[in-house]
Image (cartoon, rainbow over all chains, first blue to last red; front, side):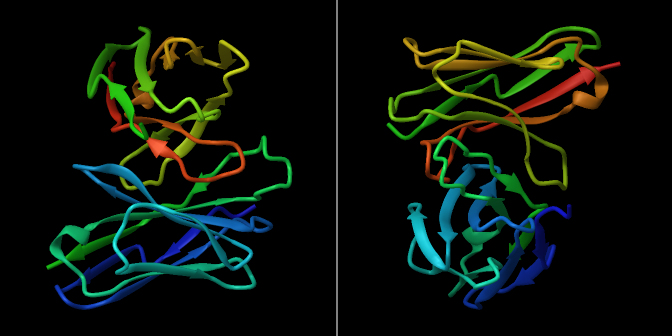
Length: 116
Length: 112
């Protein structure tokens, strides 16, 4: 079974621009979560989508947004980029079963965003 | 209350030795504690996870010890190998959600 796919793998943007990152979850997985990873702050939760609805949200400004499509693929968008947005953006997928005891998330390789 | 504190920040172990990484949390609502391993240029990969109803879980050379009263948990890597050299993250979450709180990571180097 193919793993989580993220595109593009690398991206360079300038301040003020906007960017869209894409994530394709593992086949059959319906939950997609996004995390930002930086050397200073570590891994921080951005948001989670399930059935095209945002289920959880982290403490990030409104410039960070996302959406999920009917095929479970997800995109996240960052508008008005700032230098501090340079980071590795990770996507994680999970089946999100009705059994609440299942919590495993599987991460993709990430998209490395550099803001100049 | 949402923090997960991880130590040490870095660790150097001889081949064959035991690597121990510790984490502590405050939010008693957390009931799922996974450990992830991350190699440079890769996303984190799930190693092993534990729930508060058990005090220890072992998978191969990796063992999680969990102390519910102290709100602490740790990862033990037995017979550490150079291939284990990576960054390790502990995390905490609540069943039914996928909002993990991650520790700051431990960079492990195993010397050959």
